[in-house]
Length: 101
Image 1 (cartoon, one colour):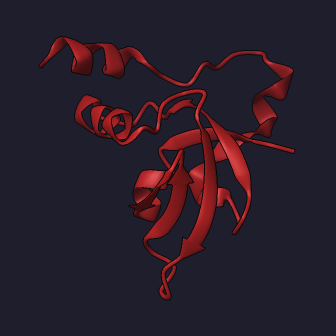
Image 2 (tube, one colour):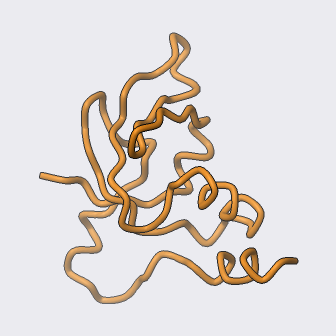
Image 3 (tube, one colour):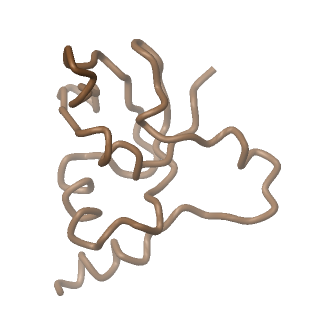
């Protein structure tokens, strides 16, 4: 495992008695046009998948906008920076976000 993959495997969603924890959700829960800030990845994410998200630019602190769903509701297109990325619903459920109000 590379040193970057090792560091990414330790990057997890911060949990605890935070009162704002109920505000966090996943990318899969966003509706068209909704914006959110990435908080982290779920514990179920393997290091290789976390590295892929990182390489795609889906890193904690980045703003993501849900653009559209495919006709059968999978995959879902998200705008990250200047790029549009298509992720399967299973993958987008692993990315925890906080909605921008």
